[in-house]
Amino acid sequence: MKLSDYIVRFLEENGIDIVFGYIGGAITHLVQSVHDNAGVRFVQVYHEQTAAFAAEGYARRSGKFGVAMATSGPGATNLITGIGDAFFDSIPVLYITGQVNTYEYKYDKKIRQQGFQETDIVSIVRPITKYAALISNPTCIRTELEKALFHARSGRPGPVVLDIPMDVQRAEIDPETLPRFIVPVIPDTDGVGAALEQIVLAVQRAQRPLLLAGGGVISSGAKDELLRFAQTNGIPVVTSLMGKGVFPEEDRLFVGMIGSYGNRCANIALANTDLLIVVGSRLDTRQTGTLLTSFVRQGDIVHVDIDPAELSEHRIDRKYKVCMDVKHFLLTITGAMKTKPECGAWLSHIASLKKAYSQQSEVSRFVTNSMPYRIIDMLNRYSQDDQQYFVDIGQNQMWSAQGLRIRDKQRFYTSGGMAPMGYAIPAAIGASFAGNFKEHIFAVVGDGGLHISSQALLLLSQYQLPIKVIVMNNQSLGMITQFQDLYFNKNRVGTTKDSGYLIPDLAALATAYFLPHFIIDKNNINDASYLEKILTDRTAAVIECRIGEDTTVSPKISVNTPIEDVSPKLDRDEMKKAMVIDLYDGEK
Image (tube, rainbow, N blue to C red; front, side, top):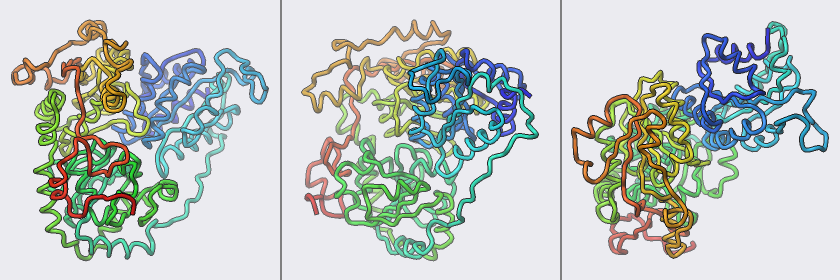
């Protein structure tokens, strides 16, 4: 059997029906094998980065792993941003790269390159993968495939890379004689052990408990367990950016998203908690702020994460550390709870915070140009029960995270750790293939992100994908202009028309990619019949939302500021009334 045929059969046996890639000389054997297998489809994209992100979207929507292929040299290096994105956001993806023949490869020679387009991609990506290997021996292919998938899906998920030379791809093998990967024995531990009793007592005694749900809740499939634990014990819930959508946002216990651009009510609630239960979130700087001494300063922290390094190497050490799968933890602690915490006063305070400092209140009080938030409200109104949101990077990401109200069967996807512009459209494409083109998808992008991923638009019309591209067009790189205005005396360089940044004619661009183009602006934002027509049918389109050139995200935390004291700042007397504990007064 040809080795490339074996690889594709292996993928099919492991539930993969789609492979995203950009064909090139060093990958032709593999692409031909995909073509020859009736159960697996090759989707030719128009940039390798599109393939990398599409494989992520496929994995996130399907719950399986994604697969992307690229040729050697520039094909392989063009995957790197997607590989890094999958690594930081814990997405299981198998990236397969072609390589020059083994007899052309330089191995340990001190020359720069021996074969045409030869590049040591394994060494380049090793820091941003769970496993990466060059396969020089055809008889190792089964071992390497099984090993790669084990690493991609076990523990904290992530990407793996297999680099396969052309002569290895075309080698003849006997599948029955191939050695298998021996799965390592992982010690059976519950991860909480003796600390469980202490944690249960801490929850029961807490007067102001708060659950912080991160992306790990999604990775572990623990959405139902989170809901059950929160509702059974009456504990309010906030989410990180990557956890958004994991808890129904209409539920009375949901407070909002926390962090640098989090909802004001959620950040204030976080500051006042006396027990923060963190499940599947790494408590990065965008969640804690840079002023660590102010974070949960009058409370305890229970930090649950499947990655031991996120617990042992963390900058905040004053906490219970539980190395455990989130789903297992929630099941364990739910079963161990005999009484729930008495926190009626806390829930009343949470309700008052939500009323006074909702995102709607934020916009009406502090945002001069409200058009971006009006667009987000519009999406809420016209979203469907199975709506999937894929959101890009920049101001569009934060407007969406602050303002979208994710219902029970809806999903919110974005990039957190790497945060590359140009993510949303390719990832939405991967998800659409995973969902068999049945679900309606809004891919929310800024004009900057559209620039970077515009070639992916052709896939929408080519495969008739039910994806609406919502372009938040402020004719600038808005997140950076806001930063420039705050810290560089409004000296905008490379971010606006006057400083070197331009956008194309979006109507002409859409036409070039065989897509309909619609405009939403201040003149038709309230035209219900028009909006109904262009937003609810399940056909691909580019919807240009003209939101004005000067746009801001509110609220926003400043450097060396407590997480609750976001800008624009509240009057000190008002801030004191919003707090249960004292305002932060410096180093303790």
